[in-house]
Amino acid sequence: MARKVLSGNSAQAYAARLARVQVVSAYPITPQTSIVEKIADFVASGELPAQYVKVESEHSALQVCLSASALGARTYTATSSQGLLLMHELLHWASGMRAPIVMGVVNRAVAPPWNIGADHTDTISQRDTGWLQFYAESNQEVLDTVLEAFRLAEDPAVRLPVMVAEDAFYLSHTVEPVDVPDPAQVDRFLPPREPHAVLVPGETARLGSFTGPDRYVDFRRQLARAVREVPRTLAEVEADYARVVGRDLGGPLPTYRADDADAVLLTMGTATTTARGVVDDLRAAGRKVGLAQLRLFRPFPDDTIRQLGVSVDRLGVVDRAYTFGPSGPVATEVGAALYGVSRRPLLTSFLAGIGGRDVTPHEVRRMFDTLLSDEPPSTHWEDLEEEAAVRG
Image 1 (cartoon, rainbow, N blue to C red):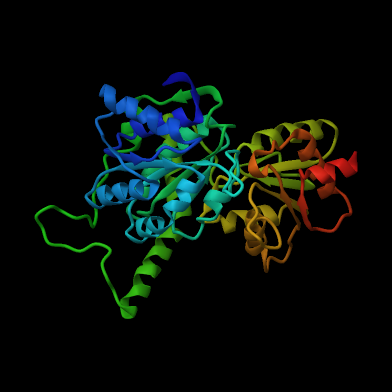
Image 2 (tube, rainbow, N blue to C red; image 1 turned 30 degrees about the vertical axis):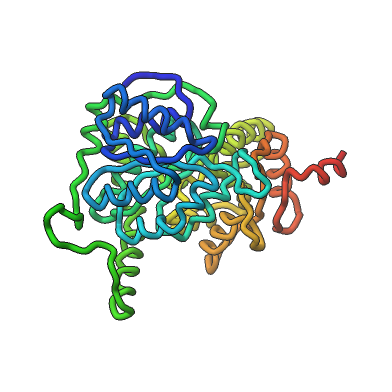
């Protein structure tokens, strides 16, 4: 184990090197570019004996990874924002073909207007493409999650592509100490990919070709079964990672000081770090609050959410995206998961940090104040300038 000072983007690149990826293809886009620049350095220096394929767009980059994966290679790519949107067609191809591609996504706002700040709209808008989605809180979690993602994606029970998302600039360009596992440790945890249902040059076969209405639904049901296997398989993968590497990432929904809390705030990404500090401050002041970090958004951890929901009276959900519904997208999913539960918490949706606005400790305290008040559950835009002006 070696301790290095890395940005989140460098952590992605180191994880790809440790995973011994065989094919990498990507197109530069701010703020993702330094991920694939670092990987290109590893390939050029011989530290990563992989093929690095330069292309003219993000759509082509994913097509290269999809084709290489269809031949049995371990593949990696990375993108952000508009680049991820350009991949949309091939995201469906990757999941439908059960290609275990891992992709780093640096969450960035979607235009218009042009904006390079942190925002989860890019990945949230791809939530129904069949990709598994993880959201990291720290650069350490970025590296560990990418390694776990390869193991999860290639598991015979799953065989699905995975996105590992990190907040733009808060992680992508900010450095912090990261414990990097030894290659031998990673090799014990992540063996070479075992090809399954892949194309072999010289042998006649079909992959992803036409099928009619009589059989199409069977493929979709197989995909649904694979998604349902993710929670069990992830638990096995994380237990093995903790055994080999010594770090436990806490499953799909790690909680903090939530066991006896009157109100719990659910966060994703870097807002979790800010909220954790506020929880400590409020606990010191005698207020019983807690925190839940949603690491896994797809598949949505309904059972774990329900376990949390029946243990707390008031639950707030912080979304760094808005998808034109009655609340934030994660809050909508939480509400659906809790539907029909006999003892449901009061659920409040908070929209904060959109477009790169800071989610400040002051705002998080205000969220807890709202949760602990007599105000009925609703949707709150937390950081609008005009509202701030009215508040004085």
